[in-house]
Image (cartoon, rainbow, N blue to C red; front, top):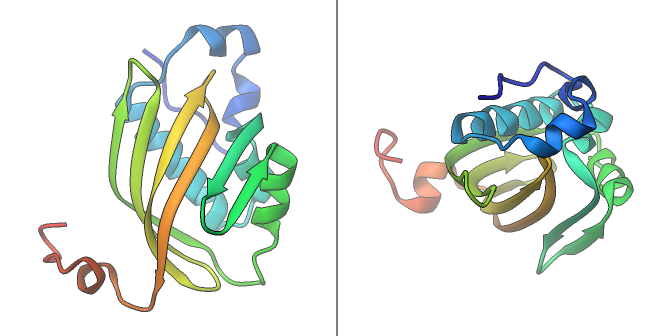
Length: 150
């Protein structure tokens, strides 16, 4: 079993050869996304980009289509000077296929609620597909769920 990745540069601490041999567990996937959200919140965009494979495909089919870690990093850095907050609402992960989904709320220049489909390769994000809606409604009002029920 893998141990939680150290912050902020977990990927540099794992040898490339061993990373390819190990698969992430559901618990580790949750910790991985929590670490990514922390890097975004702290505006450590170089660290955040390090969670993604060099050839990542990062897309919102209605807004943007980014190819490669360099484009993703430029996208993260273009934050308009706004604080960044990501709250993961629900996370599911299939350990066998190394593919997951994370429902979230994100606030930067605007508030979004959405879901990201996340495919891993060698414990890095190789594909990120997000579907999100811009709103000023909080999570409970937007999805009409009770605060306890989520």
